[in-house]
Structures are given as structure tokens and as C-alpha cells.
Length: 58
Image (cartoon, rainbow, N blue to C red; front, side, top):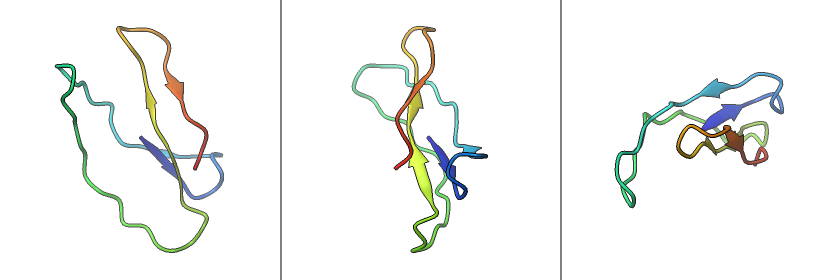
């Protein structure tokens, strides 16, 4: 998961983290945000060494 405050011109990456077994999850430390609409997030991942794909910023 990545987060940005400038529309994706730059971002901070939370991870990467490997999930070992189907159905398990992995979490990381939280980032304090505010009510400003400038905070945007996206999720990224890959499967079995394939290309990394990311959602749009939301």
C-alpha cells in the first residue's frame, strides 16, 4: 500500500510484505492522516514474481 499527499507525484510505500499462505493477511504500521482530501492511497501487489500492478489513487 502506498500513500501520497500530492496526487502521486511522490509517495511513501508501506511494505513490501510477503503473505505466506492463501487466506492469511499481513498488516503494517499505521500512518496518521487528517480530514484533508489530499491524502490518497493505492494498493499494489504481484503474484508469483509477475509484474507489480497498482490500483488507481483513491
